Structure formats: C-alpha cells, structure tokens
Length: 117
Length: 106
Image (tube, rainbow over all chains, first blue to last red; front, side, top):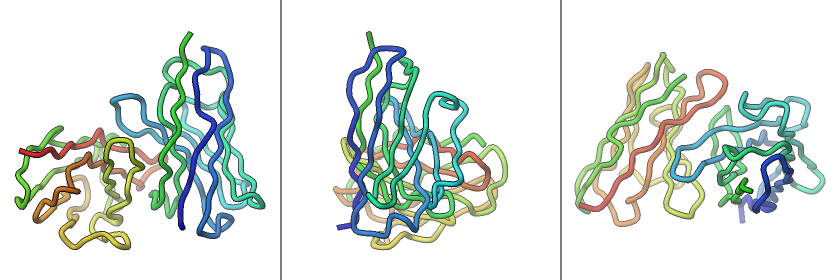
C-alpha cells in the first residue's frame, strides 16, 4: 500500500525541541524528493522544508530557517524533521508529502505539534 | 506568490455543479495544482498543470485556466465531495497555497 505515516508530534514548551518522523511504504522512497508541510489550527497549508532524493539539496521556509533541520534515511524509507527553538506559532499539524516537480502527489495523515507552556 | 481563493465557503446541493476560483498575484502559466481535504484526513492530490487530473480522480473534477486565473469545477457534487479545496502554485519557489474554499451541503 502506497502511504506515508507521520509520528513524533506532541506537546512541547516554547524553546523546546521535537523530532518528527515519516515512514514511507509502497513506493521507491529513494527516487523521490520529499517535503514537510504544516497547517496551523483553522488555517491553510504552509510549505516548511524540502529535501532532494539523495539528500544533497535542502530548502527551508524563512519562518523555520535556522531552527528546523530536514533529513532522510533512504535505507529506512524515512524522512525526518528536527525542530528546535519551538515557538507558539509552530503549533500545527505537520504533514510529510511526496513531491513531483514541486507539487505534492502523496500526503500522510499528519502529526500534531502543540507548543505551549 | 500570493494565492487567493474565492469564495471562502460555497453552499451547494448534491447533484449540482460547483465552481470556485484561485487567483495568483503573478503569472503561473499553468503551474497550478488542486487538493481536496476532509476533516482529519490527509490532503488528496486532484489536479496538476492546471487541468490534468491525477490518477484515479473522477472525471467530474475539472480544472481550467492559465496565467493568474484558475477554476476548479465539480460537475455533479457527490456526498464525498464536500470538503475544503486548496490551490497551490509551483511556478516560483517557494510553493504557496491558497487559503481554501469550503464546499458545504446546502
């Protein structure tokens, strides 16, 4: 079954850290660029970060640059997002998504990150 | 690039036609995608290239437009089509999304 499954979300205090994971199955993970996209409660979608198939090309949204780190392990069919110095405005459902020419043709169900004291 | 969707909410009866719009702040050519999202579910990829349906998407979904004006039409609404629809541009980096149009039952 072709799917993406995120995990690792939870409640964290401002300034804290969290590591999200995304497990891919049913397709050749190492052939695809991947992204993290988030959705704050009641809001629209915001692209967060992107990584190339080999992991050599990485981009971040300005809102997370310097605080978040994207990575992947093709041997484990997994995508990661290390989030440091978390702020209240980072509260959102975080989705991993498979890219194709900068649009997203497969999404996971998401994992909720809540930043609150 | 700023993406603006209208209307924010569209009330439609099952079986009727639904049409809603997406406007870009600068020309995209046809680098536009559409997604459907139901509560608690992952977004579902519908259309790319402004008008090409993704694999498995029913023919009642059609996209049109180019440049800065785009439209998604659902020809005859089924119960499973009531959802929020987002457009996304991929002409310029970074990719950006509209705020969504909620299609609700009238």
